[in-house]
Image (cartoon, rainbow, N blue to C red; front, side, top):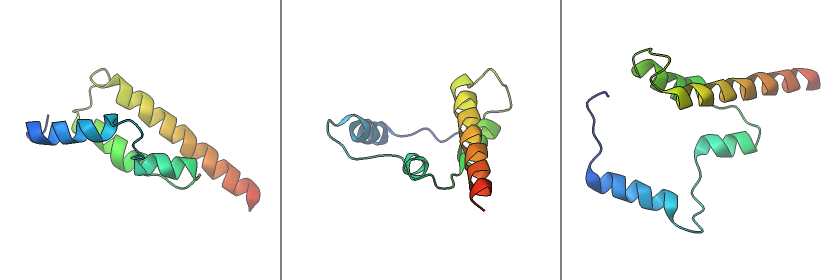
Length: 84
């Protein structure tokens, strides 16, 4: 969408990383969620949505993911406030 098409080699390498049986590869945001740490939902997924042109129907799964991440952040903030 922004004029940076990945090369066939890159797509093949990335595809292999994500589909190799037994791979321990995980996304850093997933590790942060598992550890109940702060995440960069707006900085990563929000940025992707902004770059997508603002059409709310163009990338429905990104909107779903962004909503889930915002819920996670709100819950984490509430639980941190309860501890304090």
